[in-house]
Length: 125
Image (cartoon, rainbow, N blue to C red):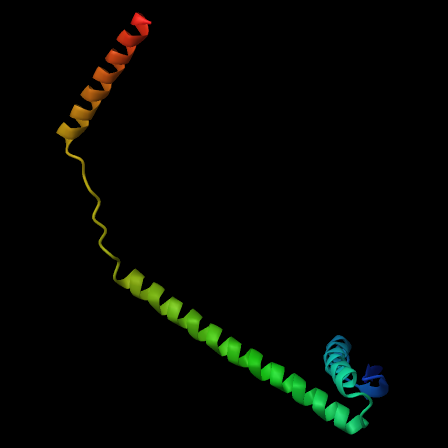
């Protein structure tokens, strides 16, 4: 079982972990150290037990906030998935305007007339 030396709040600790878990322990200890540094910066030197307790509580508070955010995001994702399933089950009817063929013919005739007038004007200039 590997033993690691970690530093939290300027104090060194020897801790053991499972083989292959060293990276996770270092990451967790860095998070705890970050919180401890905030405490030390605002309060100053405090007893080791109090520093660890307060740092752990600060991390727990952040974790609770993240869990609340995650639950809210999961609820939004579930609502979006339900809306998507509803849309798939009951596709909306979209009405597309159809232009009658005689309107297309009239527009083509007007365009041809406009081009003929433009051509005559070019000849005059």
